Structures are given as structure tokens and as C-alpha cells.
Image 1 (tube, rainbow, N blue to C red):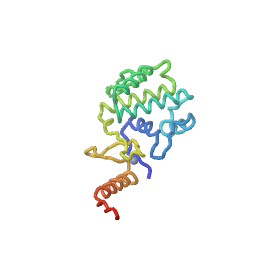
Image 2: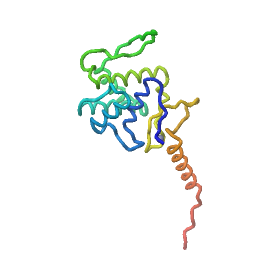
Image 3: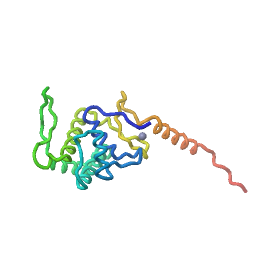
Image 4: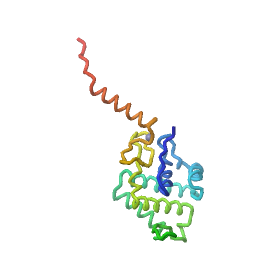
Length: 189
Ligand SMILES: [Zn+2]
């Protein structure tokens, strides 16, 4: 079974962007422009990349956002601030008066890549305010690392799926316990 567990609202788009580095299937959808556009068309048709330069920028956005989730630190914040500076956002009140972020129209940020960048940054911003960002997790099975949303009541999920990831991890833990408890064999004379 493929892993899933979708995130609420616009954070789901961010989750898909992060999982374009699909370690579960051993496939990086951002390995070339055509493959990435096929992937983006499936998750949000208005987003695309135009060329190799866009592809590189997409990878920086994706990998830095993943790092923001898993290993945040000053270098990550600096890179994201640089991206935000290139693609300005402004506060916008929706029809119910709720504030959010919207891109400033005009110039570089109107390119398809610009729209994609601000969609991710605005969704991360909103997700941090709602607390949903803190419920995004990477599967603890290292060779999976699938990004999923932990919707459990106490926020204690550890794997993207029970089968295979949870079962694999439980089996590894069981074998490790067995190895620790196994008596050391006496050396033969
Ligand atoms: Zn997994």
C-alpha cells in the first residue's frame, strides 16, 4: 500500500511538494523538468516549472522546506528569507475577514515558479499559525522518510503506514532485542 495521511487545507500542497523527493519509491520527481511538470500537474495544475533554472529553484525550495520541518536552524531561515524576498507576499483579508498571505502581483513573482514559491511559503506560514505544520512528520523508517500528517489525538504517530513501514520497524526492533539478549557462545577449544 502506498503511504498517505493527507494534511488539512493548503498544507496538503506543501506535503506533496516535499514528497516529490519520494524516498519510499526511490524516485525524485524533480530529476528533470518534464517529470516534475507531470508530477505537479497531478497535484495542482496551475503550478509548473519552465526550465533548468526553475528546476534548481524548485529543489532549493523543496529541500529547504523539508529542512525547516526536520532540522530547522539559522541557515535554513536565511535561505527561506531570501526566497521570500524574491517573491514578495502581503497580508490579505479574505471575505470573512480572516488574514492570510497573498503574493504581490507584478514582476518575477508572476511566473509559474513564482506562484509556486509563494503558495508554499504562504501555506507554511498559515500552517505554523494554525499548529498544523507541527503535525507534519517524516516516517521514522529512514529508507522511507515519507512526509505525512499526524492526525492522531495525542500526535504520537511514528510511521507513514503500518504496512510496510510500521511492521518493518517493529521487526527491526525485535531483532535488535534478540541480538542484545542472545547469550554469547563459548568458543570451541
Ligand atoms: Zn514510511
